[in-house]
Image (cartoon, rainbow, N blue to C red; front, side, top):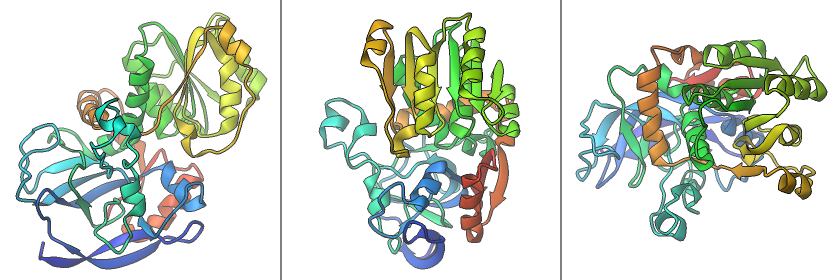
Length: 366
């Protein structure tokens, strides 16, 4: 790249407004920066929530937070990826635009960078006029402290971006859970990318049963291909039907682990009573879904039920996502998850399609 070049980017100017395509100059890499040409940017439900106004937007921002791309420039102080693997111009990498500060209580004392108060504010507060840290762009800027990992040549881009932020998010949640034990009964609420990633990981962990509650039929069909032992269409059943089905599958005890990946508060209300005594309810999808749900503390107390919240992810889980994808993509149809492709100029169409729940996974190919 030249010292300055114009770079196209898809910008959310304000919630509720259509994305705009801006073209602004972007400098070359300096010090510990990396400049990457974006090969594929995953379209996440969070992007739809941002445009819908569920999350406060302080200024125009470049959307997108999961991507695979080719290194175009390396700052003079960068010789390896975040795991110590040597990298060079031309290598393919995988990253998410989040920079823990490593100067706060959560980063250093608790060693949980997912709770760093500066972790995601950088993307939200980086004005779209500046070098794009979001991934709906031709070239992305990875400033210092951005975790990125080299992608092995035998890992298809589609297989990795299929769960671009979903699998690291679920891996983080499973880490907080302490893992799924062999033979446990698992219920997954939701069949979007997060729910499908949870399905695959539960299967790989040796769950006895993996029941997925979701819709539409194409997502449930993919859930079966990824290891679900049962699927239940939420559009053709009611809450009572689903509860009865889960009880039957689990021999009347309920699920040992329920993973909420639906992103809807009513899912929490429905799912909590389905947890078996000594079981755990894991919340992943509700971070952008405001609302309340009635809970009887006595019920949780008397049934030894744990409720675990899990937000965001950590670099460790991004690294594990690359390793899992490499090991699993030939056994499972991960690349087939990418069902919709859009150009950068069609970014608004991509957001709309995800909002309607049409793709298994949509990507933007700048």
